[in-house]
Image 1 (tube, rainbow, N blue to C red):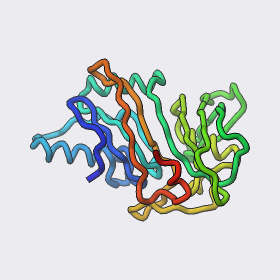
Image 2: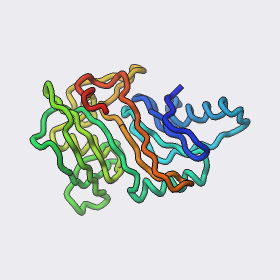
Image 3: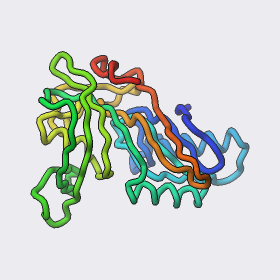
Length: 229
């Protein structure tokens, strides 16, 4: 069973393993939504269909915190937080190459090629392009790789993978965006060294804010372990 990080009447957070889909697709492979729905049906002896709302996604080769809703009210309110950028997201990434600065912020304009599902950086103002921003901090340097803490303030598809690769810092294992190295998930599928470490958000029905953290998985490359907290 997938690791559950938070569970209450309105929301549920899990630590998604790399290689697992966030939501089912045409492959029919298991997904986070499938796993959570099966868990809820079993744990609470619920007959029929069980509501599970996916309010954001992680790419298949990425691990870490995925937040879901157990009610439609929860889904609507959590989704709104992701849309308006009020959810604080922290990632860890191990990348090939090096970077001279220990911290800073990057801004790019990204455009997706729908035919190839590849995202690239383009000049500002290109039709269809979306602005992407991320703050970064170097937490480890060793053996031709660096570990970065990343705090994106936008949520574009493949955003971190593209922003890093465009600066000569492809994520370890990310052959799609120029990495030389390969990395394998626990299930034998390819993974990349990108982990959604923490989410901070407002509870959908209470005034308190929550911080949900996902531990690094066993298939995380050794160069990144000093980046754990």
